[in-house]
Length: 200
Image (cartoon, rainbow, N blue to C red):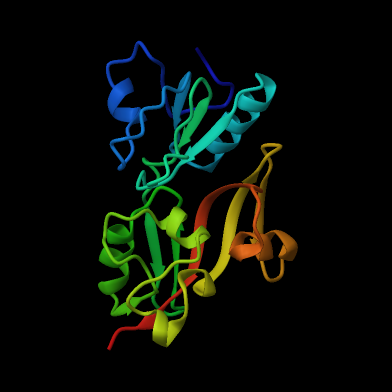
């Protein structure tokens, strides 16, 4: 099986990594997708979404894999797996961090704390950035700095059509509002940009 424009790994039921790739943190979830598309970047996410649309496949999105409800995996559809996309870039002068959609909060903390900076993140380091952020995001710094989503400055989103857009207060503000708690399912966030605050 091939996906046009996709450079990541495609994992089907006959692949030796299939069972570990379909597993999520909640071991009670036992779903069997037709295909797992392990993305290496935003272009792979867009290619996987277009493939799913063209083949009428249900899409599930796996970020950090910590999803308790199990919606990060589906039966007989495609899992757009961001778990290999864990990079974090910190701008110490601008006090911002750009975080890929498969990153865990431990990844963010590791990079931001090297600069004496942080943002409201998860209580435990193995929580996924995407799920926590898009769900609001409570953490140790929230009393002083608000929820995780309050510190979200921008998001790179792959829409349901497979287009790549930037959502912020200035670009696609309606989509940015929706991602920050407006409700609904509007696409896949491939990366997040957060405001950082000094530690201490």
